Length: 87
Image (cartoon, rainbow, N blue to C red):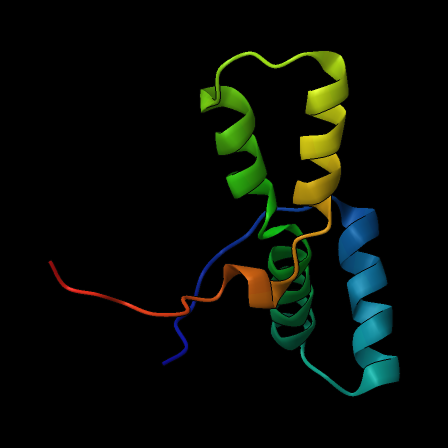
């Protein structure tokens, strides 16, 4: 269910959205919603990465670089729940 919300943005951004609206034939709400969903999808691993970086004990620079590389390479499939077991 869609609900109405108010947002604030600068005039330049609003004007650009109005131009995109005309070209794309979509409402500004649709454009903003699509952009937000894309942003969330692109950054969904960031919270996991931040949590791990802030709660894991200290590691040396070499190990930290290796762990950061591994976290950056996570795919959506890596984050899917493989199996749920009830204890």
